[in-house]
Image (cartoon, rainbow, N blue to C red; front, top):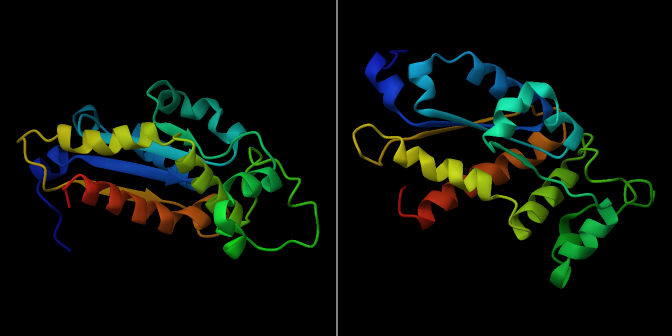
Length: 187
């Protein structure tokens, strides 16, 4: 595989998106390892349902730059389903749970390997406009171009497929990014 030349790598705007605990951790580590020249064209954004993980000191730089999004609010799963279930859309795909313990789980405690909770949190994030920081990072991809062109940018989504947040969100995130650029006429 041929690697792109140094100029291309340094000037191509790149957004690293980390989803869930492992995805966030990897994105933070990669971003921290970039040289200063590459950082001029690179942003990182992490999203997680677990509020405690995002408050970890390793994410201080991302928090300071507003490059993170907590996809959960301090509500229970049941409350979140009720708030979003306009027209019974959510109840069509959210699993019916006979054991009430899942419904009483706090959303801020993370998806805990339950992908449907991650998807529910994502819908809640979109419906409550807590996605502005990610949108700003997506917009910045095209402002960062040294040559003023807007046709080439990279978005890399990093997540594990073994957990809840990353596994439950990676397809929705890819579709969201594609639609975001399509609506702005940049795809």
